[in-house]
Image (cartoon, rainbow, N blue to C red):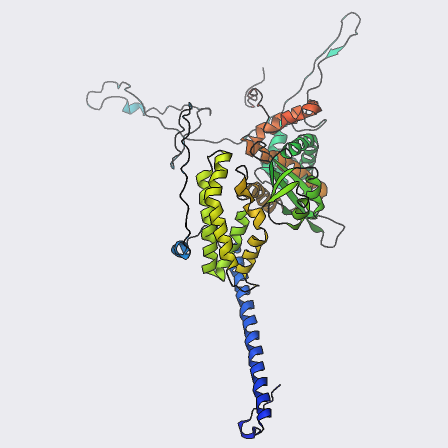
Length: 525
């Protein structure tokens, strides 16, 4: 190390070798200082990147649509697009064309009850102001107003008369007891279905539901509601097992996981993290099966995929590599995950990030154009248009010189490291470019946990998985979850176990409409 005395210009030595040694020491100090400055600048850049992500997550919009720098995005890279293959003409359809959805007020459903209210002018206005003759009706004007009346609770009294012989007072006859969702419990099927839909479809915690019922002078403790949910989940569990087997028959299964907080009195913090794993079937099996696990260990998805043959699409969770190691299951990547990394990297390297986003945007353009094609035509379109874009993107990334620890380098490593899984979709028209369908099915869980906050136990997590399976499978099949649950809660206990698949949402047939409930205001006969 060069000391201050050695650097004093008045006391420099005359020996050339000593002077050379001092110069080498000074050069080394400058190099070390430059390296330290470069490391600090890189650290500052990363901290700014994390701060920008945090601010966007906390205060900004979550959408990844590009607004700023859009012109730069288009000019950043010139991609030689191959000539587009025109889509084959669609065969004429016998169905009438559906009217386009407008942006104004939608029509009120025609099957809603309509109560006509006639508003007559005042009596003094019913005579002509000139000759005083009575006025005659020449027409009318009408408009509709949508009104709401709070739902009404009512009590069904199941009365079973007894009959016997008058002479021998024997042979007593009585009707069989009525079927109830939960034996010796208060709720009917409609009430129980509403509790389940309010919590798992509309994210309304049970304590809030108890308060709502209290406003109608019906006091149902939260603990009672919790017991109803548990009993209903046990009753419906065979249907979810049938959904699991249906999903496992898919050619491709999309999956992910999301954390939920679970109460655990045995640990110090009293709360630990469990996981909900959605497994989404393909187009031929449009259902989703949720599984709860107490941890994120890879043994859980390994257990689910044991014996499966097909495609697994998700993020690059390390456990999936072991599942796909023997080649019986092929892994598919998700370009939405890759795109998100480049989108976030704009905070430190906007130019390169926008170049990558342009390439990925072109891939999605091909998908939008091919979404209505058959699987074979979609595969040919991808080979002709998407494959050259992917080759150009890979060559561009491999030619870049970036700092190893920078966000843009991390995004490129993510894509290049999973290149085979990310590009496998091009070879099969039945496969998807991303895993967004699964992420959409996770979103209701993310919204719900902000309201119900945590599961009371591992058993509570399993019940949540059962009910999310049914509610979200109803959504994928276009089934009203309330009508579905109200029906199957009465049928599942007496339905043959060998035909339980008939009660899955995608196979369910609505029963005949129920009679209107009695009017509580009407007098008894």
